[in-house]
Length: 435
Image (cartoon, rainbow, N blue to C red; front, side, top):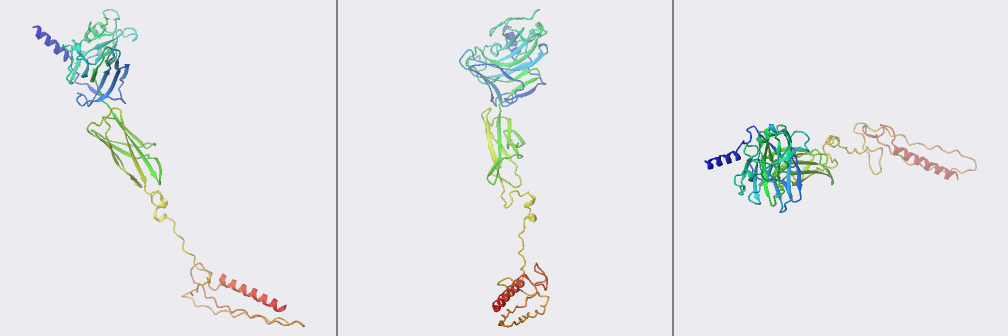
């Protein structure tokens, strides 16, 4: 009979009230802790998010560690703020990695026993797995174990001596008896309020290396997951000058994530956060092409595995060079808008060394008669000089009917220039003859 009673007690202790069927998993990450915070971290104590594919929740867990000193401590809490009377389910999962055979993280409830000033009649109820295992040990094989903190047989000790009036009186257990159960305290302390729930190792737990996951408070189950970050930087290069590439579309896939698409900001960056570590997988990042640009590489991969680490992927976009236009989309660079070379001007009059062609449609007119030189008047005693005969001027053909030359029948500038020179020469000849 005693063996049967002991066995039944152990079953009730371990199973008790299992997590509620309607509970939901809330993912806790370093960048999104869902209210969890480091409440009491002392030298020698560490807490961190780690990958753990064996966890019953996701692929990660929360790891707690103490060094070889008794003062080492690591405690994380999450606000609760509900009456103790409304608590229906409390629990968590643990995994042993190193330490004594009773090493395990504790589940803790910070409770204001009278619902008044939380700095007066408060205590921390501590649930330790080894006190509830029936063997005073934990599973040291590395397998995950589930613990029910709110069951009628679950043993919790008080961190303080508290007398909140009436039957609500607790005696500090100093790591052991006396023990209290949640249903018992709901009855003894009807005004009690749960301020925080959390997990802890230390003090006086040297050399612990343990993990927790699936921490439950009523209908909420906290799933601890590590994360990595992938940062993408796009740089634009225009004729050798570099600048941040804003407005580029970047897509990430891999490790069961995505596709996730973002657009680079003014600094040419996008940051993909809260990604699971690339354990046996990798992330592929692709930058969408744009007209007028050539990507040196449009796809890159990264496999960050260390929780909290950041992988950086640089992309270079080179502007297509299409002289004289750098920007092919510029309206001024369209083929019909390019500047045209001006046509050479039509010849004006007779050009030196060239023979003008007569108009094919108009016959030349009669050349004008050669001008006659009037005879100078004779003066007594003055010898009469013979005038120099002027040069014969060839008739000037009519310029073409089209073009930029002078109108038909009008002497060109070359003819007028030659005539002026002849007149000037004739004048000099007369002056010489007179002398």
